[in-house]
Amino acid sequence: WVIPPLGRYAWQRASSLTIDLAYRRPPPSKLDGKYWRLQEIGASIYAWAAAYLIYNGTLPLKVAIVWYLVTVLVFTMNSLRTLGAHAYRNPGDVKMSVADQYLDSIDVTGGILSPFWAPVGLRFHATHHLFPQMPYHNLGTAHNLLVKNLSDNTLYLSATRKTLWHALATLWQDSALSQQKN
Image 1 (cartoon, rainbow, N blue to C red):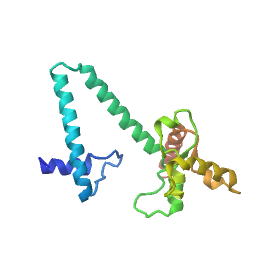
Image 2: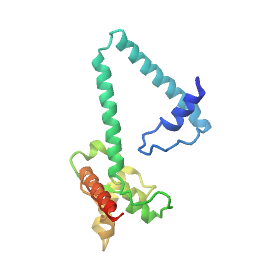
Image 3: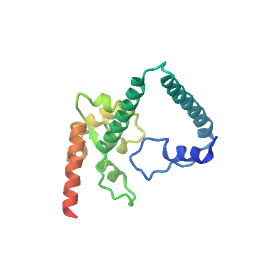
């Protein structure tokens, strides 16, 4: 808003964690505008204050290095989480049914690190597509009940992986097979 083209760019292209480089965030609503500006002001003050404190020696340069490394880790982890939660079988230009959305999503059921990389609902992303109104904290229970009570759970379990690394390895293998077919 101080520099309108920069503000539009920040809103459209730099205000969400996404791996789709072509993604453009829709224009802000009236509610977004007020809170967006407050967040923007707060983040700017924080960043400029940190830069100034590092520049004048109050904070050591190590702070900037750690800040950078943590940011890289967060972006990398978010990208891996997003990759692990999807099968990427949809070409992208086709409207998907609920069943297609389910089969293009992944449930990750285990792994000791799961609560750290998916603390809320991403572990049961496929089940979320079956029950989008269900609170995230109930998805694990719903998943377990479906596995236990479906007479034939083969199709349901086809969207399940044991760990994030299993999901990523399966995605890599499926991608290689897809490339061989083309």
